[in-house]
Image (cartoon, rainbow, N blue to C red; front, side):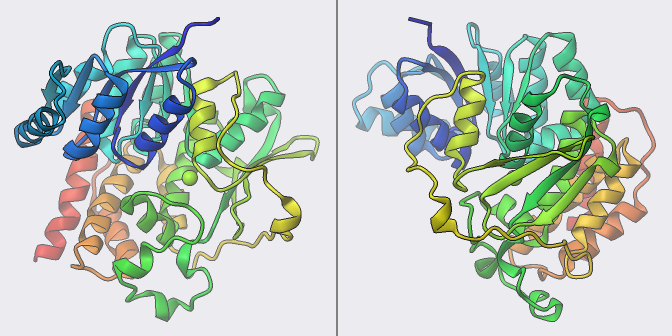
Length: 393
Ligand code: MG
């Protein structure tokens, strides 16, 4: 029997992390959880410690650690693992001895440094954290290459493209005419522009097909999520901007497509459920059964494809522009979007103000400087702060 894949999981209590844990539970002979990191959800972390007995865990801060210790004592777990805290703790988890695969399920720019850490140690990275590629760009790909490590995409669209691209060898960009990212259109696809402007967080968080965290769900409603995915795909598959198209596909059954230079198109289909792309990133090149019932295409009945609408969803073009500019522009885009979404979720700005704020900050930011981890994180943070400050005034 082959040895289980030893996994380090960041963001263990979030939507990606808890699904990854269920996959480990479903395939105990294939996977073992070695170390975990989460934010402040001590209750779920305590359950995970009880179930998976990791060697090492990390939580956000001192309070979360005290909370976790208390819950572990109540659960009568007498030999808990070492519990670290903060970004330092998370980075120690990311570089724990003996790991084979890092699953990065973090949300936000905080996901970049641990990816780099893991790649430098030669670990493969199953990547759900978009920001790693959006702001880290070529640096991340170079680090992977230099250390012989592989990045396995978890984002469903990129998993689809990754699967379709198994049909050809690298470099992809000469044999691929274009990739076609599918977008569900989010909860507002059927709405008039004027009816979207004042949408509330409650309306936005009702995503028709996918079950995700709040940041990604707001980004899906504004289509900024697709914009970030354009940048992610460009970097990951080493393509040009004009090789990436987007179509609106309301049913979320086709997860994306690749059109080759001969005109042949391959698509990857399946239930809109993250269990499939997460598990594939964990098992690749192997495949194991999932808990999902087979997809009945006669039940789906119709697959539709429509053109995106830049007038109602300006974020897509804002992101394309940042992608074409390259350099530090995607980090600025990401940071200003983080700030705008944060304000929207706190009900301090309207839904319609999200693209306006991002556009304003992109325009007023100076984007020259070297591309290194320090600089991209700095630009990301200062763009985020700029958005927060504009609104305070
Ligand atoms: Mg996606």
